[in-house]
Amino acid sequence: MMILIWLLIGFGIYYLVKDNNNEERKNNSKADAVEILKLRYVNGEIDQQTYLRTLEVLKD
View 1 (cartoon, rainbow, N blue to C red):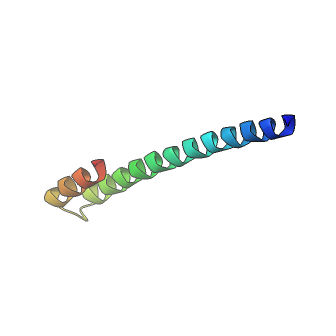
View 2: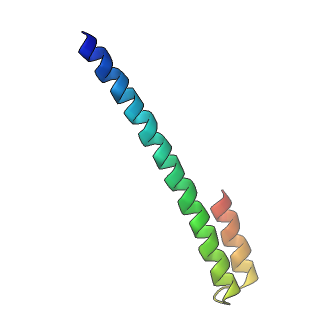
């Protein structure tokens, strides 16, 4: 019975840590996308209207 309790606690901790890592990856990928968008705008690959429209989509 004690082993079952420890296993449940272990799985609970595992899922909490796993969920936090997914949130960090989502936030990092969104920040990376904004940085790439900025670089494309600065390099002249896209115009201001496209930059602003895409930035709004990424913020949502």
